[in-house]
Image (cartoon, rainbow, N blue to C red; front, side):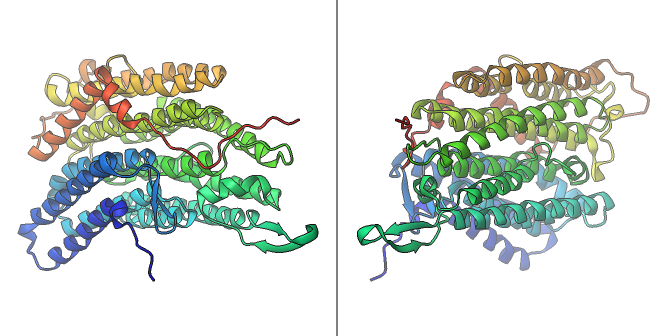
Length: 524
């Protein structure tokens, strides 16, 4: 008899995937003048997926799973899923007019965006390393094409090629790490009289890895596999020293695609990164075997170093950038470092409540970053015009009072990225730094605060250039299309709401995930 599969658990992914297929079919039978149809279908699919996610959140069974435990339903998955859908909706609003102005195939763009969203959702929902890798590949292939979607632009082609090379490195390291983890988690079952009965094959299920990690027959493979996976995820979330070419990719890609890549795939990388390491390689110490405890301490210490390097490099190098897109790319690297601070706190927590608090902090931080980052790129897109011609600091000189809506919106986003009070960025940093303080990482928090002070230079510099810079060339305020105006309004309201009234969102994101293994046993 076939087992009953709970298809409702993957309803959001199915809806978005079905919308992508419908978009491709509709695009094949519509004229160029009817490009708006595929955009409407894409938006409807994303909204329906959001409704399905909320219904799962309200009425779904906590910690339920499907497909033999390969897909899991928990707050970590649903929180990140809503972030992905929000990022995709905002990107869709930004790109509609851009696709029209650039005379690019709208159906192809919308279907690629939807498939990339499906990949991100699978990375967050996957409770098995195979599903995580599958989601990563779906996301990566779609974003490779999106980065080079402006086929006649040499910079866009270069961006796509470099992103493909980066993604190939990421996939190779991650897949090799999965293979090593699988081999390391094979266990020996004793038979009668203590004799070896059989060797049980390894596993790629994250929950099962957590139960076997302390009895693994090959501890060295665990260390090697974890190291490989850190490198693979490090490329995906653009942390130092794995950020190579990321600024080049962000600068050369079309601005709506850059906004998407800086917010969506980065959050997806964090979702699967945290699930694999916090739940798959948790804090477990056994009196008989301390290899798992040593491994846990090793990867937490590694992430501490990565967080310090990422924050520092991103902020220091951003200071000398004169291209706004490139400056925001290094800013994105720095913010990955801030999110790693919360990740470290989640990994180091020995108390379930503190661990869940740290996970919530990371989810909320990435939500705030997505909102203010996409809002900033919306303004950059309008000022850059067709072909991203105007992206240097000089192009922003003196526009503050000529286009006050754009200038004040961008100023708000810069202040939020800096972490000024009453903005979303401030609450996000308070949460991740607070989680780290709870675990005793005072030095890490001090370094994070110092890096925030360093970032004030380049964020405030752009504001000063807009309002006090001398305009050399003629400049006319761009017309703000309705869809972009809606995206700007949503992001501005989001930054203010999350900065002034964050409590309801934080409470909704509170994780209550009960892992199968989360114990601290003292050695006798």
